[in-house]
Structures are given as structure tokens and as C-alpha cells.
Image 1: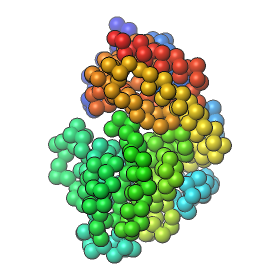
Image 2: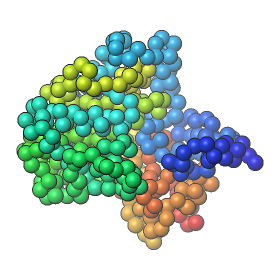
Image 3: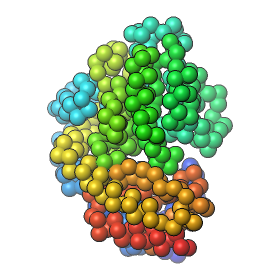
Image 4: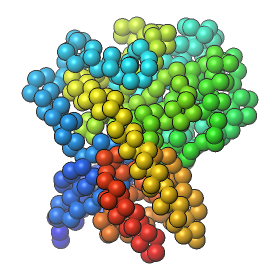
Length: 397
């Protein structure tokens, strides 16, 4: 039995089966490549669902983490620390807003946004107590907390977790007329992924985000953009909302904000929205900790150069041009923007993921028939082309 097989057996025996990983045990990683415990190398075309946008162990990010590790790692928000003020200021500037509420995981950022919208709705908009409504979309994935799965349309994520949290309306993604019909005087927010990631990298029809923005303005409701996967360079722009020059009321950020080193998330908005919170009304022991802020500040500095956004745009165009040439008898549709693609297959996707792994490329299926590709934004074109070559081979069986 190989070392990999031994460790996988331990995982199978002692870990809850809430994931169905490919049969690989990674021991080391560098840039766009990972190495398993048996010494086999693989090109990472998933990037931990966009958490590793800047590559594994990016030197700038690991250096920032090591410097902070030697100083102070946690004080909680009971005290200020010397990284916090600069972090929230720099992140607010990146988003064009003036206030940041730091959290840890993406789901925490979404939950924070839901609380923000309801509190704002009652205290600012004047919605009657207990009547606030938030509109979401079919195919959404915003996390797995009890409230979030209450408005999921994915039975795998939702079933057997009731009773479900009320106060949500779900309409078809991309359907402006349905959104308009769902909104009323009690609507406090519309929660939208500019591109739906877990659904299979689904890009909405042109003009949809603009319509969401306009309807939110018309109904005095908050446009809440979940940019946890789509943001920070993945779609070829800093934020996917920029595709239609749309500015939401709240940005939800995570994944890549932690540089692939630790969980870091944030809700970013203006003070007329986030200012509804007073001390003690919401918080997190680890949210905004010194390590998170030091890493986040370096991520922000790297994004300010525009290098990663441009790499994603240019290499993404190259990747999509190649994917569109795949045989139509095996590929039904190619979706995505930037270095992000959902390839809808004519049959099961899991065998293709497994074949790719055998060929030295790591990708993952979603919803049975879709393969997602999301390589680190620093990947070379040579490595990207090699991965796409292997994808063509894997499709042949």
C-alpha cells in the first residue's frame, strides 16, 4: 500500500463524508503545481475554488504572513492592532467604499450581509418589524449555514436541514421580469452572484446586473454582490460587477482575500449601510485578526497593480478560445469569464476529472456533468496549454 493509499484510508475511516475528493493526498505545493505524498506532480486547475488566485505559497504573501507571525497573531477586536486600520482603509479604497466589516469565511460574510440588509431595512428604510424580504436566485451557492441553505435550490445542500429560515424569495437567475415581480416595499436586498460559480460558472445574460442595480435603486433596496469566488481578479477584472460597470451597495469578499493561507472575508459598503451596527451587535473573535489583515493588505497591494486582472483577462481569452474548439459531441457548452470556465459535458464529469488526475491535471466536477477550470492567475501560458492538451485527451476516454 502506498503512503497515499494509507492516508486516504485514514481519511475514509475517521472523517465525515461531506466531501468526495479525488484519490490524491497532496503534501507540497508551489505556484500552480502540487506534489502528492508519493512524489507525483500535478497542475492545479482549481485553485481551491479561487482561494489560491495568486498561486500556492506566493512569496509576497508567505513573507507577509511570516513577518506577522513573528509579531502578533491574535488580539480579537477587544483591542486594536497596528494592521487593522490600514487594512480596512485599503480594502475600502479598493472597493470604492468607506467601511469594512471583517469576518473569516465566505459564509460568515454572507450571513453578515443578510443581517446588515435586514437591520438597514428596519432602521433606515422603515420596513415593518419581521416583514423584511431578501430576493435570491435559483442555482445560487452562498455557503452552507442553516439560513443560507434555506434559500438554496440545490437539494444536496438543502434537504433534511429544515425548518428553514423565512424571509427569502427565489427567482430564476438572469430573469429580470421575475426579479421585478418579486420586489415590493418590504424588499430590503437582492443577493446575487455576478457569475454563479458552484452552479457551473454560469454567466448571466448581458444587461442583467445593470437591471438588478436599477431595480434595487428603484425599490430602495440593497444590491448585495457575492464576489467571494468571482472577485479579486478571477473574472479578468477586480470585481465581476465591473463587466457591466455596476457598483453594488455591498461587496462580499473572501477566498482569495486570504491569499490561500488562511480564511479571510469581509463585507464592504458605505457607512450609511454598515453604520447600522453598534458595538456588541455583531462580531467575530478572529475577524480582522493581525495575521488576516497582514495577508489581506498584501493581496490588496498586488491587485492594485492590475497585473493579475490583466493576466486573467488575456489568458482567459486564450483558454476560452481553445475550449470552444472542443468536439461538440462531448461538450455541450463552455461558459465563463477570465481564467474561469464551466465545461458542460454530454455525459458524467467525474470520470473526466479522474482521467485528468491520471494525466497530471487537477480539476473537479460539479452538478454531475460540468467540469470547472480555475487555474491560479499566475499560471504560465505554457502550463495552461499543457493542461488544456490533457483535457482534450481526457475527453477521448
